[in-house]
Length: 600
Image 1 (cartoon, one colour):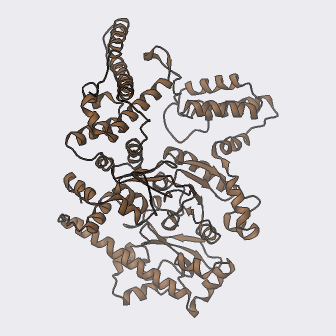
Image 2 (cartoon, helix red, strand yellow):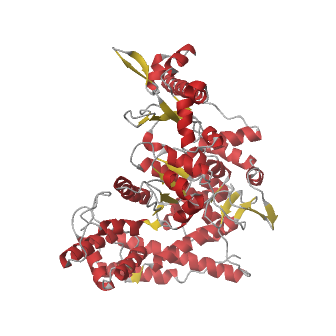
Image 3 (cartoon, rainbow, N blue to C red):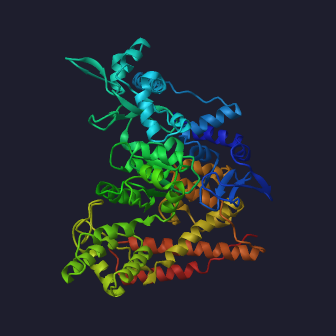
């Protein structure tokens, strides 16, 4: 349901953010701001600020922030529409209900029926495990040393020797719905039979704790050892993670990914409630994007065999694309987390978590195993392959740091390795000169160290522009009356393309229409963009004591933004002699330096 902007703004205006967040977080007033412990990361000193005046929150520790809608979206894993509806109900507002189409009604009805069937099946398996007939399954879980509490938390069950089909049939569920949610199979010879037979059952739940599928481990030597529900209208393996419904509440600042259901359950039982697992598939982009909503770091605790190493190497670039950093937990001499914890205990496993290896170091160490470093030719080929991997790092500072680190580790001249990285980056074909490159098509391009249009200035200048743009918007959010003097010189189109320019457009509009600037956060769909804009709005304005000092600061920011805008415009011009263009640009910049903003 799409809600009009005016209605969304009314819901936001009637929802006091201090009251809403105060029902989740203990807040204490300090001056005009309320502070508490951040609910999105673990901390001992309060850095989570909530402003009643701005109707915004921001954590100065982990950077999360936004308005009352984004808080519910982050904390309760709601969609934007769900957050609006929840707050509207809370303040007693009635929202319009759109009349769904016949096809939408059919799809939603089908989805709800399948969820109902799956919920009933999970209850059946749960009870069967705890009945005398479920002793085989119960004995298995006891051998795995699972407590009754953790078995309850994960809803573990047992399929026995069939029976769920008959049970659901007696409950009135249709064979079509049972088949469509993957609980039964049908063929001409045997008719309808249970898909899961003689298996301990692991219900798979979505973020709302609804059962969407199952994993089943066979008792005995049958094949396959693990059987998962097929893809259904309510179950997409590539966009769900086992245990995330529980792990999303973690405040540790990272999550742990492993391979199996039992690994997740063993870790949760041992106190590592940040553990999740993929669902019988290789790690996917969809799973990475789902994790990004809850953490910026993932520690991989895959099996220590070659299959586990390959799985980790496949997952690392996927996580990087999603903006998630990764580290590798080493389990040797044990195969998986479950085996490690049973043999060494939770305290030793925590040490392995703390000692997790930088994922790029892990990649290079695995790469090294393919070469004979005692042979000059093998060593040369390894250095070339390593240089190609380093060349794939987009950030120049990060790339230089790794170059220096590996030059020292492998006793290579730093300048020689730098040249090898540059040569590899210029090599044609996917991944430059990296023979093992698979993840991202297209040549590797190094981020240039200088900006030619700025007369060879180091890119540090662009960082000054970013700071000027952010600070100007922060000051506007803090004092909307500054818009008049600023708007005489700077238009939203003068800001850098992307979320900052969009924020400038929305902030100018909100101030002109006398709406609170907090309302603009909801206009951004991506959570990362909401956090960026929230950080700008809630940023600290430098202590400025006099009007003259404020005028000078504003003038400096305005000039910096306009200089950058003029350079970008000059770069985009075509058909003009470069010398003439540069002379014109220089004159423009000289004129800009004559700007003096007055607040009188």
